[in-house]
Amino acid sequence: MKKVLITGGATGIGKSTAMLFAQKGYDVFVTYNQTKPDFDGVTKIKCNLENEEDILNLFKTVGNINILVNNAGITKDGLLMAMSEADFDDVIDTNLKGCFQMIRFASRRMMKQRYGRIINVSSVSGVAGNAGQANYCASKAGMIGLTKSAAKELASRGITCNAIAPGFVKTEMTDVLSDEVKENAKKQIPLGRFAEPEDIANAAVFLASDKAAYITGQVLLVDGGMVM
Image (tube, rainbow, N blue to C red; front, side, top):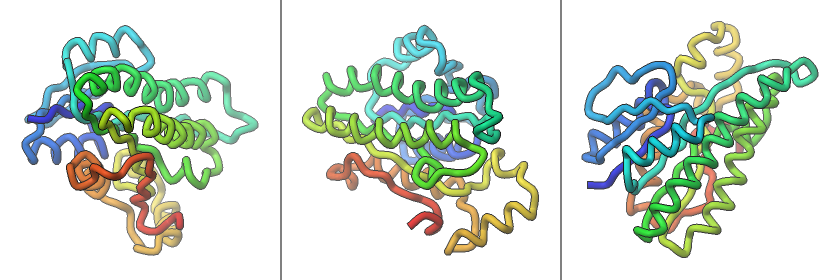
């Protein structure tokens, strides 16, 4: 049974991804920092991705893994000229540095196995940018560069590394938007709707499968055609 580790698996995309992997018979481990996952069928581990000791303990608990999904992320939005250094650092540390740390430790185990699948959940904001999200966009763009570098370094050991760039997704993060903002956002999407979390989960499960064995270093936009 293949072992999957998903960061930020309590809600939204992470929850849907964990549940889909579990349904397909994978041995699933999810991390959370504040909100404990409220669903069954997976192993839940508290881990602060800004704390290296937490990450070391995480891998001691999980052991060798076959598939890593870097999904954990936070936002602290604000205009660039008014954004505090602390808000910039917090988003970079969780979204980008956390992803780096997870790849760093997971890849060592995958290299010994000569097999692995690494999937980084980036964002269309990391591709096209977004006003009021300089820290978030920088972190997600950094994940794309990290994905491509890791893909080149690890390919010879049978490890693929790809990124998924979701657009607007129906999650707690978008639930807080006003109806007016949501309707204006939908006008930018050729398919005319927000993604369901399952749409992103399906992409992750595909990239982890043998059907995607010859795909690496790529960014799969799951955005309804928002960014072309």
